[in-house]
Image (cartoon, rainbow over all chains, first blue to last red; front, side, top):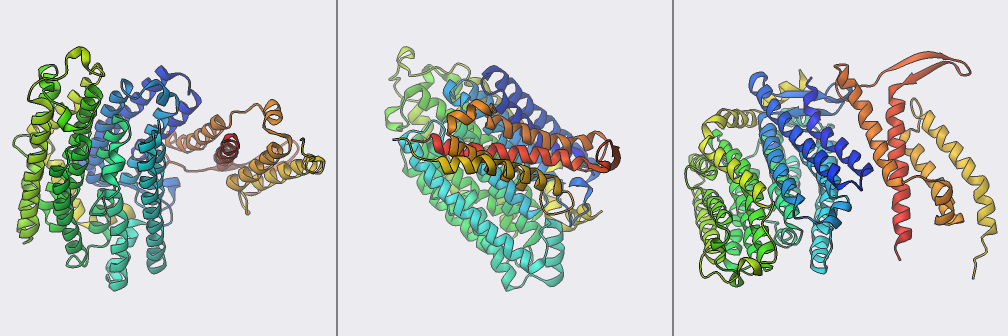
Length: 491
Length: 140
């Protein structure tokens, strides 16, 4: 029993409720929401160290023993994602302070932001399938409101697409849960894993597994990413950044959890299928990223590529590959938040997202330019930046497992990323300066701090990789040994 | 033209009281029998909505001075806070407890901490349900 596990869920939730009561006092809202997220980060670090020393931590809510009650389970994978979530959310929140606008702040922006984080943290920590569905809905409902907040015509149109897609995916999620419950009689993840290991994963269960894969693929943007480029390019920057950094990642987390803990018996069907989806995703995302001349479109297609790449590590099912995926997943959360913020700042400065109309920003904004350059190199995987280790281990793992085609496409996708990011960098920052400081539509005042913080976090993760190697290796080991998870829940 | 709603108003005057009483019964009944905070809150919300429908938003707002958005927030706060109390005593989150007390009128009564949790749930449900109806009615 470890009550700390519930804290990342109830701290933002309670604080969000308090903020609804003090809706008018913007200053108080800012301070309290920042305090809540900082407290969550501290708890994530504490949890990481407890898991490092004491193995997987569990909490049976209300003292009801598993599988009858709801379990909360914190393994190293969840804790690492929790920490990355906290860092990104703090930075996005600080970015929102000076960019979101008074009107949105009064329209419950901060409570909704905290509910979003509640849902994301809850999804990482819960050990119950139906509870996972509830937390998914929690952050989705918050995101529905956030994406429509402000509401221009184009924004509402894209939001509708986003909402419909997710409602359909959620319906399939429920259908999958019902099937699984009717076949196994349980929804506790550890118990499900045990039961399926006992009776074997027959054709029917594999079919349900594929149903879950489709659901989570829709949420993660794995192949079914048709909704993603539109929806992620319309909301205000701070919101787009937190969406790009977190929401697809929860889908990825769910795929990892389901296909390492429960449906791991037929990798030649399910994992191969994931591999094919990942490969197609990387290729399509790559084509989108190099084809478009719209800054936000390029960035959103880069989100899609990285989803495919992270999945490649799961396909390999080797400890190197999974460790690589975890590195890359954490790196990607930080870096996607970062590039979306930089992209949003460019749009804020120039008033356009058309790359052909932007030029020479580096003269007046050297800091912004170089931080974007670092982020771009990091995304491609240049050592010693944070993307490097993820790329190396994932590729190595995929090759070890014999999926040469997948590894090859992964490396090719890196070239696509390199091309698209350098295209963005050269067009936006190099060239003749066409905008004087006084002609700019906005200032970078207050926007550079969160960007710098995230850049620092990303660089620190690359250079200080030694410090987290142990944690990541433990996370990969726990993912590959479902028995560790089961024992922790049933002890 | 003013709509003729004498029947609606007269029925509501009686029905609202009955529904409110029944909702409290449902709420109290929920610990061991069918009922509880959720349906108790929902039926109470239905009686409030009935008042809104028959007497108009303005008139009810004059008499029930509650911000339903804040009411639902307070409800969730109460529910989660009861869960957190068990953390202070070193028990898992949401652990409930109960005891028997001798109360002046009711005699030997079983009081459970789940009742406070349920109060929170009921408030949250009332706040949300009424709020949904009110936001729809404000939309022109």
